Image 1 (tube, one colour):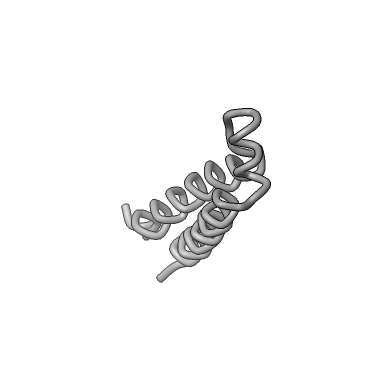
Image 2 (tube, rainbow, N blue to C red; image 1 turned 60 degrees about the vertical axis):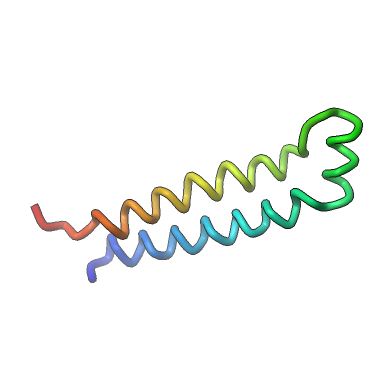
Length: 70
């Protein structure tokens, strides 16, 4: 396992943590209020969701294809 794969695993775990935070924020009272008033989720919830998805996918790709062998 090389450094790129280790970094990919680390990023994947970080992305999973962000997605977990997004899941928690999705059902928070302030987010429910935001949906009721504005019709959309709070910016922080969306940032956690998008950021977690991007980081987790990038990390998974780095872990799977970052072997450095051509």
